[in-house]
Image (tube, rainbow, N blue to C red; front, side, top):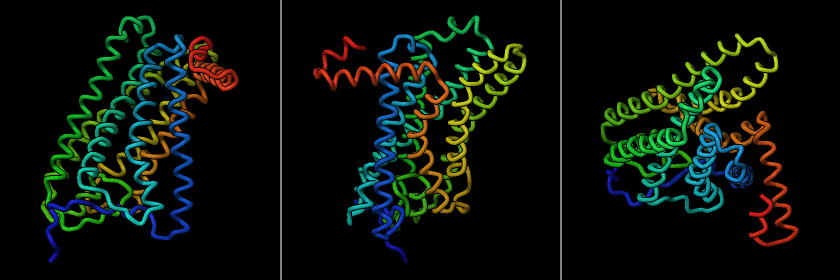
Length: 322
């Protein structure tokens, strides 16, 4: 009979592998990815903040996406990196609670934010004459604030339901504290937790994905009606990047959270989790800047400013250059 560890003070993150040489390789790879994630998303934030031409709804949402990517990969990656090198792979109960809570807030908010970005592109492409009057600064701030607030509410439910369980094991066969691997440690009945998880994720991710799909169906139908090849090219270039991010992000989320507990494979879930916790935050700046000339020009402006700072020294000079 397994020991009841409902009041366990810490968990152990087993991570990816116990092979030392493989762990060092993983540490190097994920550290490089993490550094690029921070640099890429920080550059997007700087580019949007200092370029007044980018003070538009589309870039306001993109800036918030970059901010979320910085925070939620930071919630996961540093602890994951420490488990690659340190023998002590434990995480305290409170740290596990906070990691899961923050992660759930951020990932739920990002799902809604991607849907808002799709709606913004729909209005810009299909209703350009009313776009400025509809997507006002006040509405954008309310929409983003609502996304964060809903993420907070959803996370509170998940965290409370998960950590009210009794745990029979303390070893998490995963690289961070997430709901599915924690449910596997429980000796309590987790059927209610699974219903809550499926309901919230189905409503949040499913509803957001539906909004994105509908928006892009309308956008594509509008593009097909354009007579100008140049108009088609420009409209397509503004939407392809977002749809690519959407496909990767929602595909991995659906794979993990919207399936029965019995069908979960730790190895496959781990790979899917790496996609949306590590890979996508790094890829977002690349994908969004690759086809966006406004972002590329703003990047060049930021890099010129940073180069001037390095040559001349002094923070006040940055304000004059930018």
